Image 1 (cartoon, rainbow, N blue to C red):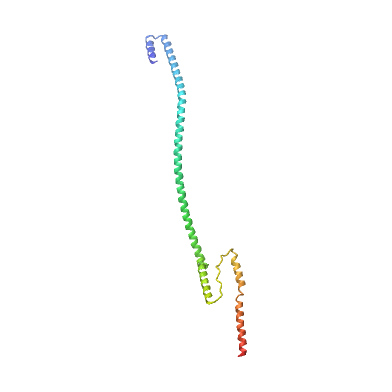
Image 2 (cartoon, one colour):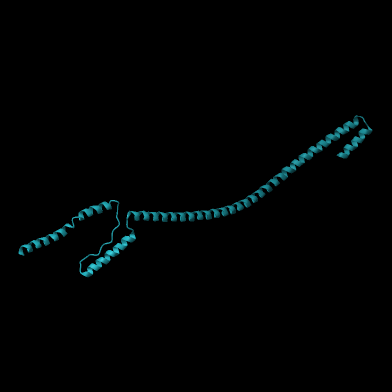
Length: 195
């Protein structure tokens, strides 16, 4: 195409008339037509190749997505493992703190109970053992003593009131001891007139 244009330019220089102008215009027109057709062919090729390229890109995208999902799942597994380990550590620390708090609470409660004079389970067990030993000693000496029953834990908060009421009812028990003293006085009175 360029060669044709050069020939036309040379011809124009040799023949400066209108003939050259019409040939140049025809050459430009033909050249423009060829450029247009080349563009249309490139567009058609791009459409054909574009579909193939698009399909190839889709396949590469699917492949890349699978790889990405596999890596993401692997990372997710690692993160899940780390989070589980951290949760276990937190649970262990919380359990240790709870145990420590519980032991502090028990120690302070025991200290407060001892300040109030409330006997511990160990104290009650020791006293029960001593009472049983004394009952056995009295039984050896010939007394008729029943072994002491172990103390029962109070059932309700009202139990101390019932115990106080029972103690009040049991208070008249010393009166028979006075009656036992009364016969001695009577025996002393009877013996006095005889003397």
